[in-house]
Length: 395
Image 1 (tube, rainbow, N blue to C red):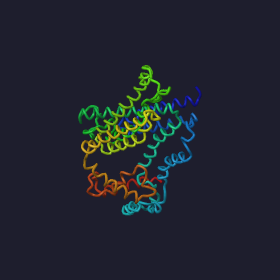
Image 2 (cartoon, helix red, strand yellow; image 1 turned 120 degrees about the vertical axis):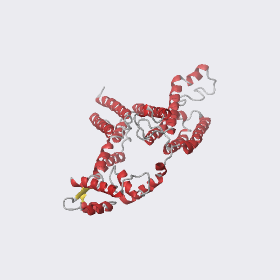
Image 3 (cartoon, helix red, strand yellow; image 1 turned 135 degrees about the horizontal axis):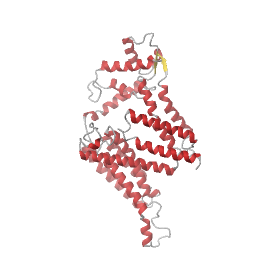
């Protein structure tokens, strides 16, 4: 085995291990598992450079794509550059915080520089958090189609496992031992994630992929009329058409899609159910004429697929309106959206710094918004000022 083949195998198993590990501990949404994934991402990138791997297809990493990846990696670092405080105060969105610094007397001679980001520590964490998805994308572009399919099956296996765990959690109640101490999501399925919406995000990504593989494996490679005109098939030919391997593939993907859809419903996430409905609609439109890869079932197969897709949408409609979880915070999503638009307009085009969304958005929430931080506004402002001072004082 040559060096490239050895490197490809190492990258494949390393990427598979990263996919399996990512959701195990609160969905990687805590410092320790995130640190492990960042170290694993560095190892994958080093392995990629060591093996001198090249994309499996020439167009996999075009120059525009490479430029985008480089910009994505460097953007948080640019936001950590120090600039003079006078220039920093003139940047979009900084006038409010510059005024707060003047009121506290923090813009004296000992504080002449500040980094662009309002909360430098959050931006540093964001830069490191970019490493895992960047490594996954670059390594996946260097693998063969067979290994990519195997990784996709690993991903679907993870999604099905999370969906089944969520169903167990929902059926076992709020005090279920299968919640692993997560008491925040007692009325819905959350899997190993800290938030049910995070589980819904995983499942709604996995559902279209599962439906695509299901459509591709239905009767794959077997012509409807056989290879000899309209001559009658023998019993053995008809049985061969429905071989165990082909039936198992389509059946497994169908069962996986059903498990993922049920798990998504029992997260009781309205956004998750809405996106599942959208995914089913788009998959029906895209794959109804591509059953088996080239629609070996003809017009009847397309009509059947469309009927099944529409039936799924009709069945999910009452679930969205009656069964989906609802609370006052979720009902305030449009208020969050309005606040986000205000923040974007004020900080465009440089932004407030990677990872600072939650801290910055508090200033744009109405005072009576229940979903916001109940911390008094002066304390919030002092917290932001402290963040700016910490970032600027070390420059």
